Amino acid sequence: MPVILRFVANFPAIYFEAEQPPVVQDNRSNRSTGVPKCGISLIKEFEGYHRIRPDGRVDAYEDPLHGWSVPTIGYGTTIYPDGKHVKQGDIIDRARAEECLIVWVEKNCRTKLEAIPTWNRMTDNQRGALYSFAYNLGSGFYGKKDFASITNLCDSPGRWGDKSWVEQQFVKYRNPGTAAEEGLLRRRKAEAKLFCTP
Image (cartoon, rainbow, N blue to C red; front, side, top):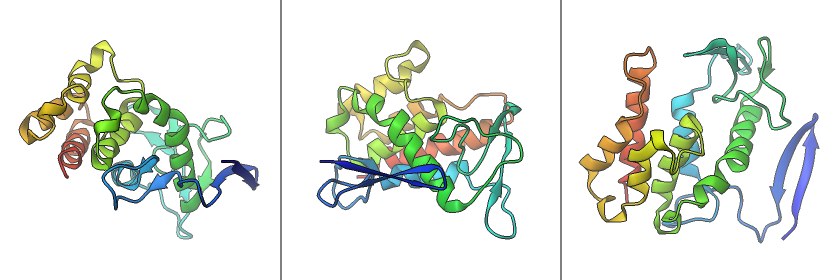
């Protein structure tokens, strides 16, 4: 089915014909073919929409761990869909912030996550939790040495109902001893809760 590309103010927007599922799915079924809305919602909740101006637009801000060496805007965007890096002084509105998030997730996370061998056995909530994890820590986590616990979680469908064990796997990725630890711990617990929600 053809994809319709449209450019609005030099920003590509992706539209699908009606018979093709949209990029972001609602959660009425247990499994979707796109990025579950619950995943986008969780990312937005924890990334936040920072430095809001009186008109509702936002300014670029310093990354909490890396400062201005990683300028960030909207919902954690560091690179725009056109490949340009966010820079200090950039301003965008909420619609563009959400569009940047969805395009980035679709372009950089979806293919890698769908390659997880158990992906087709996961519910939208489980997938949504992993989209949030991947957006925060990188979509190529599966099978990597530093991500053995979360890889083990993905490979252990028989334990997906064990809420305590699932949470233990997620909370290992929280940057202990850093200023970001408290926020990352809250995020990992929320991801684990979503993963265990039927």
